[in-house]
Amino acid sequence: MGKKYDPLWEYAGVKQPLMGAEPEIDAKCPVCHVTLHVGSETAAGQHVECGLCGAQLEVQLEDGAPVLRPI
Image (tube, rainbow, N blue to C red; front, side, top):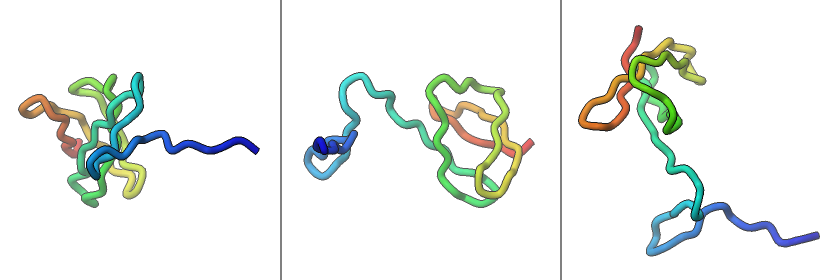
């Protein structure tokens, strides 16, 4: 059995993705306050659903960062 490698390298106590990996973009659900992964291809105005509470949310950009608002 081959070795299993962690997809993240730890550098100075901070995990960094390997070259070519997409950075994670996270936003908090305003209903249940869980952190949701929002893909880099997600655009402002797009609708998403929280996987924990099922709330329907709209992605908005504030200062270049995604923010989730209830519909």
